[in-house]
Amino acid sequence: MVKAVPVERSEARLLVPALIFIALVVAAVASLGTPLITSVATSFDVSLGSAQWTLTIALLSGAVATPVLGRLGAGPHRRATILATLAIVVVGSALTVLPLPFAWLLAGRAAQGAGLGLTALMMGVARDHLREERSAAVIALISVVSIIGAGVGYPLAALLAELGGVRAAYGLGLVVTAAALLTAWRSMPEAPEGRSARVDVAGAVVLAAALVLVLFLAGERALWSRHLALAAGLAVVAVVLLWVWAVIELRSTTPLVDVRAVRHPAVAGANLAMFVGGIGMYLLLTLITRYAQTPPGAGYGYGLTTFVAGLVLIPFSVLGFVAGKLTPRVRTRFADPLLLAGSAVVVGGGFALFAAARSDLAELFVAMGVLGFGVGGFSAAMPGVILAVTPQSETSSAMSFNYVVRSVGYSLGSAIGGLILAAGTVPGHLFPEDSAYTTAALVGIGAMAITTLTSLALARRRSSETTP
View: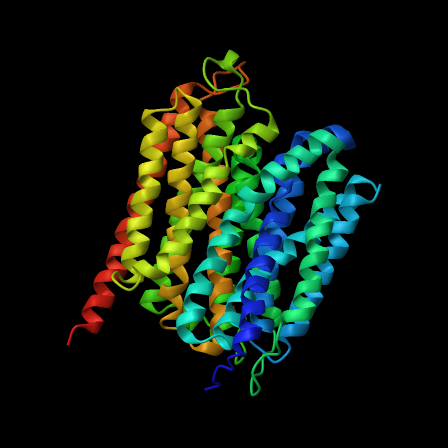
């Protein structure tokens, strides 16, 4: 077993903010596509469906890059992997700013999305180079900022888009990613000696193909409504590819993801909770932001501009950060699975608030704040559940798989929200009926109930294992 190599206290003071800053930057930059979709469609004279790919392609590349970077980060070249990935993100950011055709913008967004794979590596660095009690708190905070980064980037990007156009908004990404690269170059330590990590190329290719299909099907709602047989066929292909990938990983001596470790009841339960919980969390985020931007002429909504709608995310980010800071203290009294369950209940409460009270804009802010607090607590507790049964050298790989599960859950949450609202739209009308939002909220409550029960089952199992 390779032991941790704690850095000196003065170096730790620099390392901790660097880890958090890099995790925040890659999350915020990847989310830049969300508030700029309409601006991209107008500036590049493309359809909204095409412009949507500026977000989808970043999520796709992030999901594909995450397990590969997680494996590379488990080896001796972690520092080089971090720097090379951030360099790719910077180049991608430059492509989004330069006056190039739309295809180059998509290429740039794909490069930016690859940075999402660095979150798990930041956790690996923290676990290797900080003392145990300190690393647990930092890992929890890294997990939280990887979520609230969207709430930080959304209003800033929207404001810049209104003031200077879409290129100015993407310019923000170039500035902060360049700062992140400089920060990593100055602060990232080398990985402990005695490690080796080979990338399972076959497993990476098959997993990439499966994830591309899954996220494509989640994002292309029109495919399900117009070509159901084709969509169902592609879904079957995706399931088969995931099965093939699992077989490859079980037989490989250097698997991309240690599937045997993933099958551990604690890890499998945590990933199931992350998947279902991710669906619910992103569903509510989608519902609130879309409701806020719906014009009052639809019979509901507030007709907020992109920038003002982005401000609705501020309670999400602030209370998410607060929850992340509180979680390490609460963990001294409650086990991580119980914290997952409690956080899922809080998110379910956010759904209930949205379902029952949304006639005033302040009520949307409250629901968004409740969502942020629940998501922050859930994200902060999740690493503790997984890392409690994960070897230190496999930190990056184990957490990278959890983040792939999270990405798929988020994508499905967005897709499910779109499908429910589409089903609640009267033919010939542009906006869904108000009741469709209530239906979607009830579905979200069901998802969070499943997440709560799964987390409680994890807590019971841990209690039985620790009871003499």
